[in-house]
Length: 372
Ligand SMILES: *Cc1c(COP(=O)(O)O)cnc(C)c1O
Image (cartoon, rainbow, N blue to C red):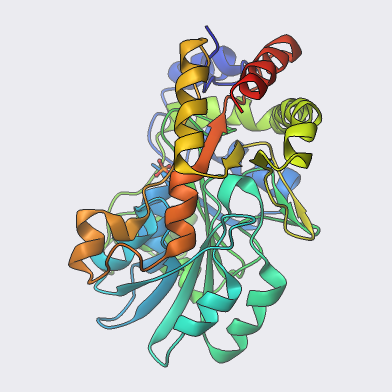
């Protein structure tokens, strides 16, 4: 039986967990968290980061201070976390369609939907393939913040910059299904270390000035603003530390699997029976997802069932946000985002993880070929 997801087996995981338990430092922001932040700096150039319980929590931090009526443009083909975070803060999610080549938000459609009330654009780097950031960075000049949902993008780059550090705000996910996984976990990223970052520090720590108090710059530990508790537990940080130490190895192994698929499916791509993953110029992926697209929903269903019968798990992905109950409540209707709907109907993900062998990739591709 081939696994669809499988956590990378890395060195030091048990050692760090034991160290952490023995140290008695189990709350957030302890020595393991410090080691994780140092690794993010060293390996990805991430300067300003806060570890959170999940990427969803990091997105809540990104949108915490939206004002009622503030609009945030984000793709309909997406995970719901960012749209929920916008709504919770009192803002309004404005959906846009995707580019059928990369499944990322279409820059042209984003620009169509920007108004005087647009405070931010939230981009999802689908499959760890960067959005066309060059087309979107100029938006910042008109006061629109760029938020990167880089939940899938740990270890992926746009030109020389790590995903999550190109825009103004970003997030990573370390959920069990992601490349670098500690069960549940995330990070909030900010390009600049400014007053907004200091504010995020306080919100994350129950709305208190605890960090300043511990640093000795204030004499009392007190309530400063509305906050929550958005810290990553040290036990998760211990696992994450070991995983991040192996980041390059994890990425290399996953990209190797993607390369096996590319080679073996090349003729199906050439014959037009399958559509390959599109790559944005300047994007360096991380092998998070390997997907193909079919010419019709029926062809995709046939392939998924046939693969399943052969013991190969292959999964569809996001139901576009406008097709769920929340999308209808926001006033959207089926047909509003045709490319998102088409991707929802025709995209299929193949298994990809560090434990997948070349023989398995070969078997998967031969089985798939025979179903086309
Ligand atoms: C996984 C994922 C998330 C949520 O990550 P959590 O850490 O589980 O909250 C958000 N956005 C995208 C695009 C994801 O793939």
